[in-house]
Image (cartoon, rainbow, N blue to C red; front, side, top):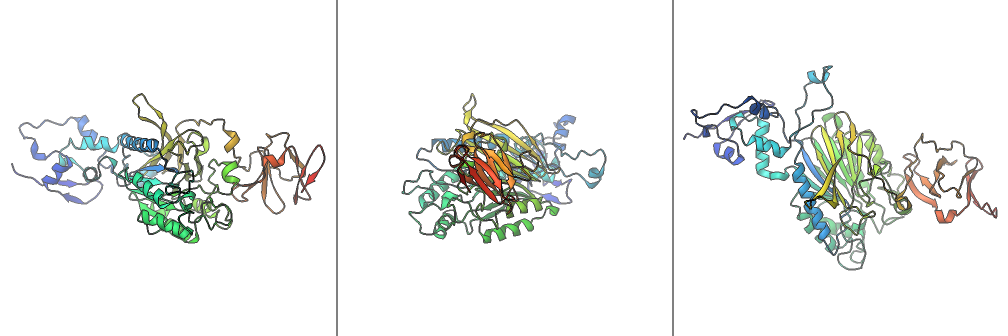
Length: 530
């Protein structure tokens, strides 16, 4: 039999590809000469259109991400190992979402053109199955490229894991394995290596808590970087033709002037981050996904008011007024920042504000996988599935199994990147946990604003009172859940508890002297505290 070298002409490119028959056989495509001319079966119209329909599809900007929240390894790793298997199971089920052909300028300007991009109804794995049935000479360049990537990467092509930090065990025992110790880094690396996927990671606040082993934050951070072979605590990784992942790490714990658990990005990272954003402009079609342990101020994600707000560690650079607003300002100025993923709160994905939206950016809260880390008995991981036109956000429920014992997973939201829309796939399942995580975030037209506070603004005998106002020095204060809260002047994100519920007691709140003075009055004794 004569060995032929087929010529595959890409319909999307003038490029012509010549491949030897041996390589085509490795890819699984059918040899043109493998079918005798006398026994050739005519391909039906349906079979032809099946492959022709996605002749210009590709995976050049397709990606899958596993986004792990706070890891917090435990003595009994059964749940962690199960969660790892769950993630890989779901990743295989979902497969890649191939890139759709880009519409021409003429199509986009047409009155009949649907600007909501075509939904891909076949996965990468399904396309591979179909392509392997075809003669190599009938395959487009993009299709042949997909076969080559499948041969090279297998089922988990273009899949990346990102860990949001807090690697060591949650309880501090002053021994190796505690959060922030060399052993915790090595144990976490062994666990992450077990995914057998490329991965990146950022530090969380607990990753610099190795106080018994390291004298300085710099030494602690260097040990973390050494373990993972990193030159810097931040990262930038391109996962598609126009998609880039950016990671920011907290770099101080002992040196924090306020809360040790504040997640803080230093000036070096901030400068690098701004340069990365600037070098990937929206005008050139770039899409950026950012990762940090704590969320940024102004993201509108649910926050633990009586934990993280009280302790001044809810947001990135929470206690640094000069830089904490820079992140959301950068997001608002740069539409190429499509998503920002964070952990830190150990909260469920079932709450409405575990996914939030500011301008074009979707903010994503990632849960935990360990039973000793969860605050609400849920154990969950995010899967992000994207291509050139859209992003899908999934939840893997490690605490819920189907009849076959596999983890349940669900689609949470669909992002149309061409139109900037987001569609939620289901209603939230807010549970009654108000006593420990309720956090009110003021809004300009929420009906609770007091434009000119004068005299009594609240009485703690009515604990359901919600109001907020500006003091004369422009500080924003409010009453919520029977306590007085300070909010950021620009984003209205909660900053800290000024007067706790216990300190308030049954006292009334008065604002006097042209909003210069806050007074607490005991209604029974009329005693006042300024």
